[in-house]
Length: 204
Image (cartoon, rainbow, N blue to C red; front, side, top):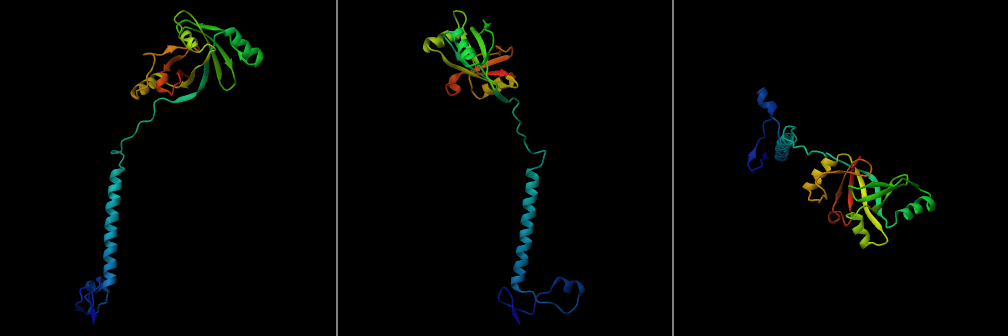
């Protein structure tokens, strides 16, 4: 005699093959074997349920796609320096430092004279006041010797950039882009939202 899992006596446990054939003989299956098979069946059911849930979760019709950015930040276009004496600054970069310096270009809509200094990997923009309401005049009143005024970074879509930045509460200093020194649309971002730096975005 062999005891069952409940402590009762039994002659044995009929296997599937015995029931199907109707033969009088039968084999013995231990309680431990029955428990092992039960755990295996439960594990297979749990795995099947988990897989079904994963299939539902990743179904293409249920996945919400996150849209990629519709604009991209590009390379540094130039660093702008306000100068109190434009002729002296041009002499420094061209004659002393040996850089290639452009002609002076007036931009009355921006209130500045500009000169570009080619540096190979980027440019310097020399700024000098043009007109009584030039923003550079106010800057030079606070910085008599001149200094860093802004940096300019390229973007591939300036309108999309403006929309995105407004949604992120970044203050833009004009409602619409204006044409900059390179003949391309530009906007400026307020320094208080850019770690104290005036940032110009220019459409590449």
